[in-house]
Image (cartoon, rainbow, N blue to C red; front, side, top):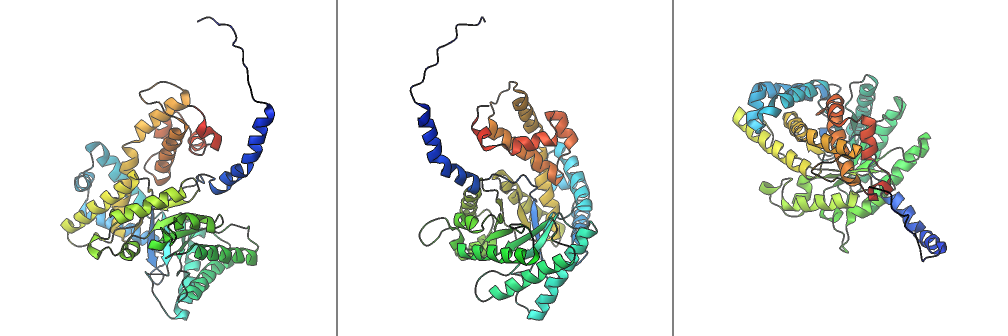
Length: 433
């Protein structure tokens, strides 16, 4: 096709109009950057394991892995048996089973929280003091010896009046112990439970600010998760979404919103037999959390099931199928993290996660490759979709479901390429694909 005549370009607005509009929107631009910085681009663990403060020990991570392996050997000794229980396809059975076993041997827990709240209860002050100091020592030693889970920390008692002072003291003892042992580990995570008012979140932020100042730490170094376990944390008395206020009240320190299945359900009057992460009340709460957190860099975590895979094989298989199904359901809804209550849950946690990523990674890699190379296909993807595709592949790589070699072979992209698509500049998402 030959080159046609050059079109005449004409405008009607003076340049000052655009400048005035930009100046008027400057505060909005700054607000967008402050409130919605986007995903931090760091690894998100696929689960959180809670261990009571009195039960936590130096061998907890390895013990959970060994118990999970023992459950797998007893109740599903090979790939075919495991696949039959969970309904895995023949194509997925071998890779998923092999990767689950390897994960349990190498990194059985991705995120561990030493619990000083419901799982621990009220103890004499001297006893909780000692348990908090012991938790700090064990975690510091684990990081020094490279035996720690990628993420570790504590869940303190909440900011309600009856237990507030106890929770603050436990947090202080724990963090001080870490500092005296060499400093705060990179994988440190703290959880604030049973939050009802945004002011409680602000109080937590101020508490951490005071600790940072006391030790000369960089401001904002310590973040924390907000646990959503009450109706007031979703809907305030004036009808507004409290959880959105909480994210802002954290003053940049909020790292996650964790749904508490049983406390929240009970708060709404759901009977014990129907308290589950797939109850409509749970779906509503998590949907509000998800929308409130979108774009803020705060991650959302699903809750747990209290149906434990223990007892005879038939009962274990029933519990495994339930846990697998709930985990797959959560992943489809973009809840990429959940809680695990028992070592027997870990095989099905990883089976669900690995199957989720392995069954879709070839298509995702191919679509991302076409997008990156601007080649045709039967789907027209845009920058936002490229972000989702690369995020999917990166999460699969982080947990061990995928290897960078197989992703690179299909997508022709390096991890750095994936990361650039997963965390684009804000303006890139509005550009045409």
